[in-house]
Amino acid sequence: VVGENLIGYPPRTFMYFILLALLPMIGGHTVMNYLLRFLKASIVTSIALGEPVGASLLAYYILGQEIGWSRALAMGVVLFSLALVISSGAEERYS
Image 1 (cartoon, rainbow, N blue to C red):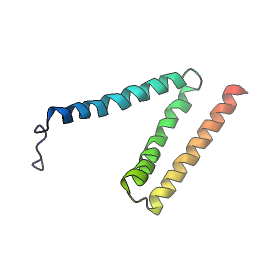
Image 2: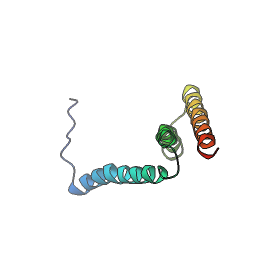
Image 3: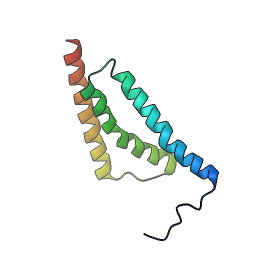
Image 4: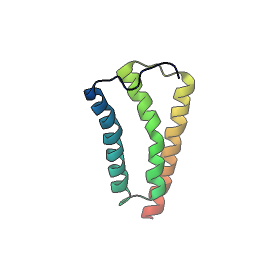
């Protein structure tokens, strides 16, 4: 669409593309399946909503990307919501 060459990369670069796709996927699924042994499915799947928050923080620290006030507020809302879901699920599970 914008004239970028998508197949002109060396084989080593394609290997990294494949690893970037497979390793996080396999690792993420393994961790989620492991957590399902101990936590309710609603809690485990809700935890995945925190991934954009973590990615934003990593981008801030590693890449120097700015986090504006609106994004910081949204991240706080997500983390607060996750805390509510996790704490209510823990009370239901162990009470």
